Length: 209
Image (tube, rainbow, N blue to C red; front, side, top):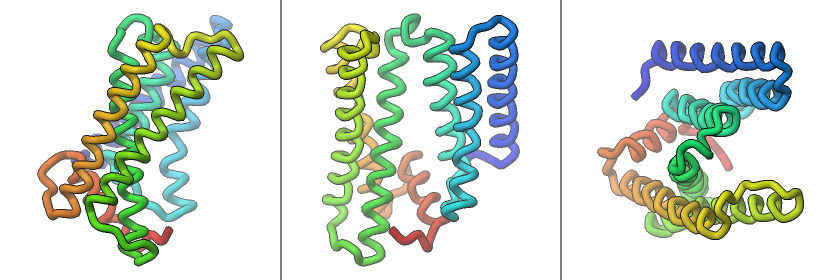
């Protein structure tokens, strides 16, 4: 797991890069880059604020993963044009986000089950986590289609081919997360994802949904 020192160094570097991009964008009059870099910087400050407001402690690995994802999506993807330069960039981000949403779905139902608000077997909790992540992926594809049709954007890139590959990797990511959650409930924390889930639950024993 990530050490506090490594986390601080990494977040400092990323936020410093965002500030530099923001300043250079202002100087060059690139207002889209100004908006994206500023918005991304603000979003990197959200996880610690959520901890303060809702008293939910995010493991450092969770928090740095969120920051990296924001940087990869908004800065490298949009400003760096990685979506056009590397065909697999969008696939990679869909895959990683599906794993994250799958973990979130599992954690939500796990706490509901532990506080006796529902009663469910581990396999059904894992199935919910899988369905939760895939559903979000499907809604996102609908959003991309709507933006392309209504505003003439190009979010779907190659149309149906892009959509299908996105959904396929969404399913794979969701499957990995749900299996990791199932493994955790069966006492197996050997995988990195199941160990992250275990860390989150261990550091947040009193969450009530």
